[in-house]
Length: 425
View 1: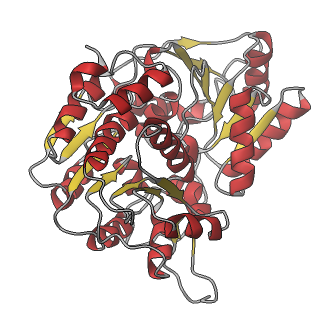
View 2: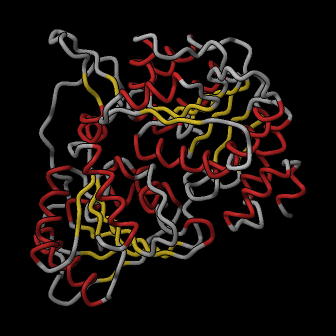
């Protein structure tokens, strides 16, 4: 099958050709015709399968076909959980609409809002946004969602993990009842299905892979190792393997900073990416990693969904996630768009429970290797290490790990120190 058979316009086909794409992915084959029919869609596909083009291409075609006045209200809204994902989606929207008379913009926090406001006031057809900055600018009267015709909720499961349910509900109330709704998620959990019932109308369900599956193109492997020897082992693997582009995941921001410093001390160029970094620092780190100037990017789970790095060869779990589904999202940064990749996990004794839960989730027993000189400690406890408990928000079902990784994504309004309900930018 080719893109020519999906009913897309010549302008979109020209943009697709410019990108070098010839054959649509399975999610694109299934989703594009249905979206062009103006039906609501609930779609699930593993990461790296082309979901963004699956909703962006038919959305742009619909908007281009009905473009009339010079005045440009926001007619399509794409809501994403993180800044990195918002920026990535916006880039794709711009590329695909290169030969269309449509304007797009992206808004998220961590940067000056003035340029974003100026762009919106000039007129925007497609707006890509994170929830916090969107609601902030709406409250300031900068933008209106009353003319939205198409609403896309991207990475819906991640949205719920990060505690954005109330923000999503607020955004929905700001849009007209008559609109097309598209919800894309890596999983169809009960919470996602419940959310879908409140957003979608008679949706067509599209699912191209088994839930929580991992791409066949990803070679997965476990190195059993003593906890205190992990840093030495990962430096050895990277150095002796001549790995040039490695995405490494840690569970905490402090752990990411600590590992990054040790990498640099060992002569490996590295940068950290997590919620405590400013948006400028995050953008610089990611740009350096993509260009090859930075060899290793050490990240927390804030990066598990929003990164699109073509042909990324190596992903390393320096620490296993305590939420099994996050393993799927982490390793999904490699093996994208049909390319091969390698996912390695360094597992100490106290992570045994996490490893078993991951294997149960993905239905695979991962092969185990032991490197001489980095053997696991036979006397170490297999009980997961307890992390410091923090006060739990009674209105949130998020895990402690997600709260910690995403705290910097949220801030209260200025000049109101008593305000406790924070939202993400």
